[in-house]
Image (cartoon, rainbow, N blue to C red; front, side):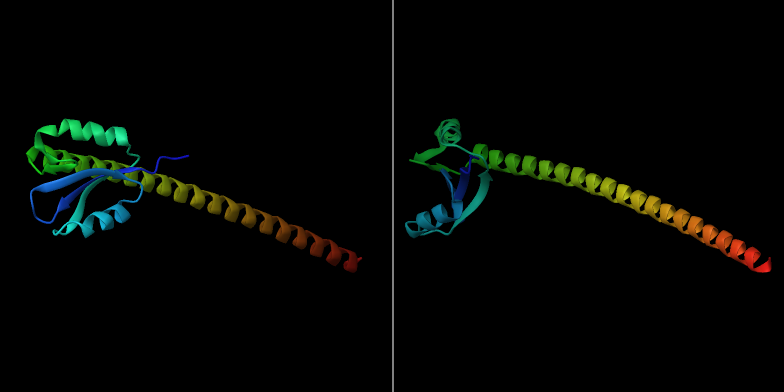
Length: 146
């Protein structure tokens, strides 16, 4: 069964506070959190295939910035991590997109080659049939002349 947990960083409005949590449904979790938070929460980072272990590792990594529980000051170390993670994700996405475009171009090239081959084969077959028809016509004409 695939891991559906997501580690998320949710910033409280334009404050300098961020919650690092883990959930299966980040949107549902965000709605639940929003009811007890006067600031509008917004997701600044998600890490797919996350885990409680990763969440705890991040809590430990940023422990100097902890306010209480899972809430942290959104200090340069955390915001840098968020920006770096987003940049890496964007780079991976761009690389995957580039590779997929190459795959699609290759598939299109192969499809065109196949179409050209089939068109050439069809033309060859039609020419053979036409030549056969002409030979048969010549044979019929020769029989009639006799």
